[in-house]
Amino acid sequence: MIGGARATDLDLVDVESALLRAAVGDYAAEAAVLLLANSGSWLSRLQGAGLIDIALDEDAVDGGPWAAVLWGDLDQALRTGVIAGTSGELRLLRAAASLADGQPVDLADLTAGVDRAELTLLLAAVAHAAGSHEHADVTREADGPAQDGSLLGPVVAWPVRD
Image (cartoon, rainbow, N blue to C red; front, top):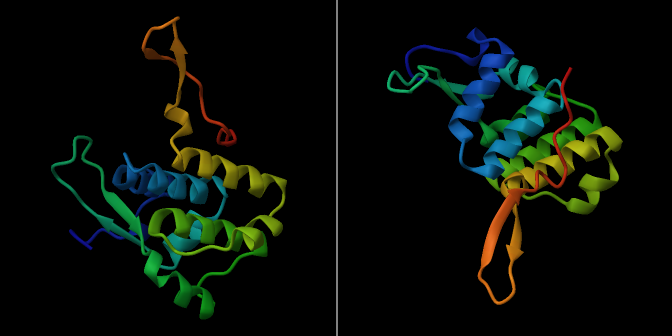
């Protein structure tokens, strides 16, 4: 930790912003953060358990902090009961860890144990990680080169938050 800031000192909007600030440009890392944020309670649980590290960057354009989930500490936190969740919530957490940190995940188990809302979040995360929100329609005139057209939008969009 740099500058004495702690994730517990920030409200959840600031934690999410700091995590996204650090992930920007890496679609898989962005998808992991958005999956945690959209799942409802993982950011607050990880924050309360000390599993989010904050770094202050005085040179940042907006002056805001950067943050990272301590992915390597998740297994121990789960084993010792520091954090817990329903089977579906835990599957979302594992999916986020896989996207952000490359932790292996069993897709058969992952998809078999989620409800429709959780499945929507998983699909949105995979679509985001694949960069589908940046895909453009490709047009081609007769015997001409391919040209990017308008943006198509994500294959599966993030649900609107209340």
